[in-house]
Structures are given as C-alpha cells and as structure tokens.
Length: 70
Length: 318
Image (tube, rainbow over all chains, first blue to last red; front, side):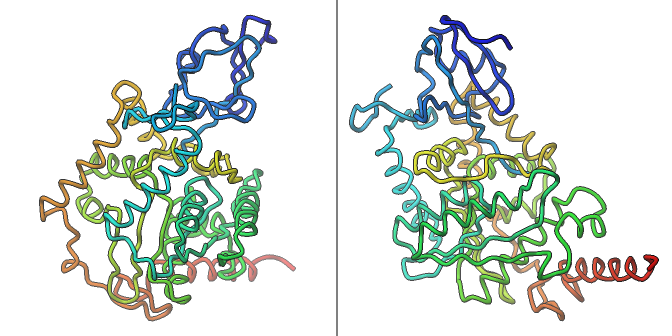
C-alpha cells in the first residue's frame, strides 16, 4: 500500500498494512479495513487505546489480534 | 473515553458490561473478578495447590499471573509438543513460559518434553495415530499428561486458561451437533472423577479474549502472538468468528449465550454430568482412568507409534 501522507494514519495488522484517512475513529477505521473491532486491541506507541480514539495524521497503529485457539 | 472509576484515560471499553477502565483499574478488576469466579463456582480453596497448564499464550500466562498476584499456591506445567512447521512454535512458546517463570521464583515450572518421554513429537505421533492434523492427538496427549502430572506431583486442582470465547465456541459446536454428553460436561468446573482424575477448573471462563489479551499486554507479559500452525483452519476459530460477528452488532451476545447455558445447567438436571452412566477403569499400563476395557487411548496411541517406528527402523536399509 502507498506510503502515508500527512492526512492519513497507518494500521498494521499481522502482515498487512492499511492506510486510512485521519480524523476517523479507530473503530470506524478497523471496520473500514474489513476487520471486526471485537477481535483486535489498538496499540499506539505502546499504549493501549479504546476504539473511540480519533486517529491523528501520521498515526501508526498496531492492531493486536486477540483470537487464538484450535 | 474516561475510566468509570477515576476519570483517567480508559485503555479498554467492555461494551458487554458498559464499563471502560484505565490501566490500573482494569488490572485490579481482572484480578478481583477472577477471585469472585473462583469462589462463585467453588473452584478451589486458599490452601490448595493449583497446577496451571501454561502454553505460552496470553490466556494461560495471564491466569498464572493473576493466581500468583492473588496469593494462590500456583505452579505451572508446560508440555513441549514438538511443534515446529517452520515457525519454531513450541520453541518460542516455551521461551515465553520460561521468561515468565524466571520472574516468579515463588512458583515452580514443571516441563514435559513429549518427544523425550514418549519417543515422538505430537505431529509425528499424529501421522501414525490420527493420520492427519495433529489436533486430536494433541488434545488427547495434553489431557492425559496434565492429569498425570497433577496427580503425581500432589496437586488437587488443574487450572486452564480457557476464556469465554473458547467456551462459547465450544458450546456453539456442541449445540450445533447436539453433543449432549459434551454439553453435560462443559462448565467452569469438572469435578474429580474416580481412578485419579483431578478437578479441572477454568477461572477465566467469563472473560472475553480481548480482556485476557489486554491484561497480558498491560502486565508486560511476553506471550506467543502467533497461532499454532495447525490451528489455521480449525472449526473453533470459525465459530469464534461467527460469535464475534454477533457481538459486533449486539454487545453481550457471547456472554449471554454462555451464562444462560450455565443457568440452564443448574436449573435442568438433564444437563448435569451423568457420572453414573460413565464407567471408568484404571488403565492396566498407566493406571489412569479410562472408559476402555483394556489400555487407555493414550497408551494405545503410543504403543502404535512405537511399533510403527520400530518397523520403520527394521525396514530402513543400512
């Protein structure tokens, strides 16, 4: 995916990278990436965030998958 | 979003409880709730020695951490299954368990290396016994070894890190197939049986998987993030996906599904385990409880694996 510009935020999930517009909530951004917000945790600069947080331009977010088992 | 208790920045919002908490209050809430569930379901008493089955994943290490923080006498059991598949899965998970144990000198870590003790890794044994994915072999081996070690080392309780998502997925699977016997035996506590079966408990069974993962992250517990390489297409993951799709639109769906099942079990005797209908014998080889007339399935499996390996050696040209 293209490198971020100042108006976007980047979401990393496993081996995938998503670029979304800044200004949207983390929850909306996760849904936009076709992921289920119930199945991830949102981490920015080592801090755990709630999904109502508004993404800032240049944010790099790590989505931690929480589903495990077999 | 603010913490309900102190108005600091919340780190997690649990929509099913309408509860957002900051780091400090979330960690305390997880520990208090676990204590409450232990008492509510009469899992174990303060003076009992608890063996925690640890895999290196978030749930089991979170459970061990919570029990030690609460002051329980909780030791760990790691079973090295010998799973690699190019991912060094067992090696990495064992490293996480050892790192945790090193930070807790008050607790003992027991380790069973399956290949060293029984002569083959789980994937190798599965090739012979189940001839396919090793999940059934793995489950059989873990249940047997956990019970044996708990009994041999004098633990009265075996605790596993099953969370609500695990339990709800199992419940969905058992309901879809109307597996009545499995439904009867699914609960936070599996009482001790005859012939040396220890009590099995699931103190995290009412926490969502997001919560145990958040707890592990916030406590700085290094756990293995990657899935078992054999779990990729597991049916239970498909069930979790379905339940989380419901949860996304209707917060609390998973919790209601599981808790209403537990209530139904209490109210309808038909749901209670039918111990009288289950005849257990001691396996003549290992002494553990089995419904088989002769050797238990675990001993039969290893007998077949050893015979297969011996045959392989005999037929390999020098």
